[in-house]
Image (cartoon, rainbow, N blue to C red; front, side, top):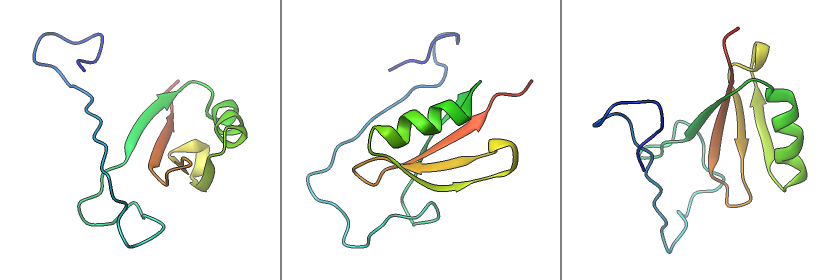
Length: 85
């Protein structure tokens, strides 16, 4: 999927689904071959609350939410960064 706001050939988002989970749990950000998905938000605190209410977990939160590392119910790592002011 092409990301909005860029010219043709700009960044894209690809999502892959595998039938088997890795034998090592839980996944860590530094695991070989694993890339987390990152997003920027103007209100990271509210996003973390909503994410937790939906069944997600908090791995860590950096100073000024740069970054917040979360996992979803499938143990995928999500990075959320506070938008620069």
